[in-house]
Length: 253
Image (cartoon, rainbow, N blue to C red; front, side, top):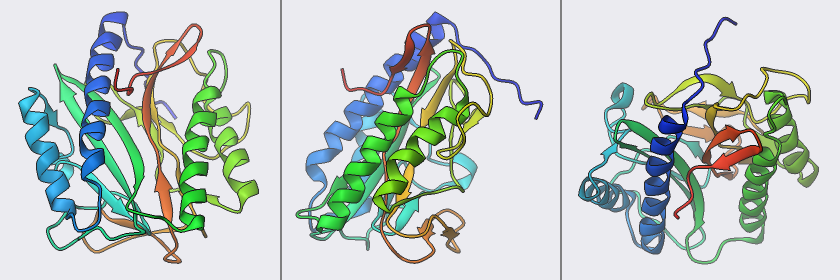
């Protein structure tokens, strides 16, 4: 494909580590606010306030015209949901909050799916399996392995449970640039794809759907929803490839 994959230095990875830690701390800060009656705009505005107070910048704000500081994706929204004042959380919802901070020029990118009140049994299962998919994907990151190993591990976790893996949106390299090569599909074949090498830094962010994997992007040009209107969940970490495997950079401490 001719794409150039940049390997980060130890100094750069340390900057990524600091940015990632701060992004995880932002999700921790927002978590208690995820409750019935709260608007997604409130979560957005609190994220922006907190980010500025920590001398960081919200990477999504203005990125290719994205209008808000975080993405808030509820129920059938797969990704890139836009916070707004009229979107009020209600009991039983699931919501993915995706944050990316820029600290000292480097990006920390992470997301989690939260329960609002008491979820249905199907929603709980979907969210739990999606988080397990992320763990399995991270465990498949081995120096000398292939990027296809990551997607295969995720598929092998999700599909036996009757869930599907979104094809249209993938993980990505990240550094002082928000999105770089390589792309990290969450589906694939073991032994296929680019070789995994120490110094690579990328996100794994599986989006797992209750029904079909197919997505539809709404007229706002951002919000992606499931084609069948069923639930979708997502978890995301940024990680660095080391000689020993994967180091997750988006942990709170």
